[in-house]
Image 1 (tube, rainbow, N blue to C red):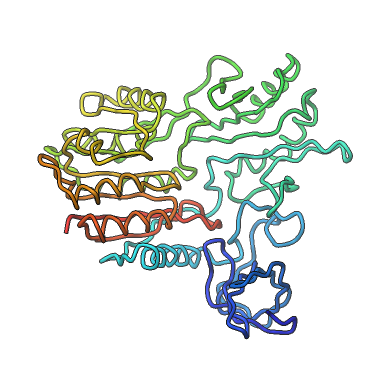
Image 2 (cartoon, helix red, strand yellow):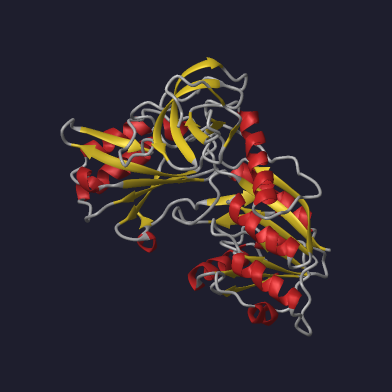
Length: 449
């Protein structure tokens, strides 16, 4: 048990940006707000047999990597915004921490050591977040509207007047949005505003729990004209999203290296950081190195973020996704970019793949794998099973590029590919898609041993 007057030396950071120390008994102590190299006194909030959870209350040795947070909403105090966890750590040090998290997960969970660590992909650290889900709360007791992220470890909405990771135009819009919602008849029935921005368009999706009056709709139009915002309405689930008015400029992001334009709806999954995504796609395609005579499979293809750039290089690309509706959107994007002749798409439950499924999808020279946080366990296991019990006429791809948003599931799947399926992990590296958060995006490249 940590004594109240025991000074702890912080050794590292964990995946939630908590300092990690050991007390006099050797028990691990996770410390919110502490950085490696610091000596701190803590207040323990939770005790378990193997670890303790604590908050820093005093410091006598400060890390040289500690910086002053830019955002006034950041901190450990009551009401602090929970959108960022690492603003107190130098931005370049954040990237180093994330690279180390990736290495540690590969080593400890997957028993995999990459032959080469790639230089991390970095970009702007402020104003980068082009997608966000902002909670809305009308507080009758204070006759006040809050629009923003949730407070740390709380269901309450932080009282934000600005946000440094949102684009400046959106940050400057937070207070006007509060005034707008407060003026609406349905102000207590509007739980959420979702942001989706492109180079030309700032779209806001208003979730409303009852039909909006004509007066409220006009308030939205007037606000949109003043602030150059495109309003979308969402009365129920994501499939019900529609423009407030029938026309408007198209939401799309561009991959100029490949001449690809990707239209999307504001509730579609797209990367929050388009600049980093552009670099990520470029690196992934170069690492995969598709040739004009090769066939490629893009697993978890989404809207075609990797499929379409790959199709500008390869003979054929098959994109596979979990829903027919999403597959149809991918087909439309391929048609929009004149790549329909070099692409095909199929819908399949990618979490229940079997070796027979891989054989049925046919021979491919290379794979691109970009799963959600759950990873691609079924796919990796099917490859491993086919390596253990080969199937006549099917040969595994000679190269796999795996893009991950969860280093733990990447490490798990890498362990199968390397230790069972006959691959080498030739390289891996972090991608700082979400600066100032503990989110770790990464990429790993596998080749047949």
